[in-house]
Length: 117
Image (cartoon, rainbow, N blue to C red; front, side, top):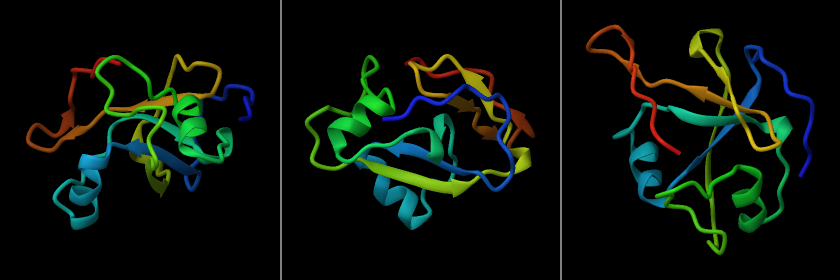
């Protein structure tokens, strides 16, 4: 794992990652789920070679987490950051961590409630 200096801006085009629980992989792949929100990481900031290392590097052990350190696989959604995504620095655990709010398209704004970790 690497632990680079914390940067507050995400440049458009930056490769990003978000861990996805196994139960959501199908919905993301089939288009049933398209909202991406929560804690995300720049791909350049984290390195791991197996699911146990990913579990630690991505701080996946929060209360009520669906992730376990002994999982045989951890799924990641990968994308290139856009200027409009609204990444906000979050208090990471040694690795730069960012938070994006889900867009509430019914109200045309951001959802105010932030999920617990």
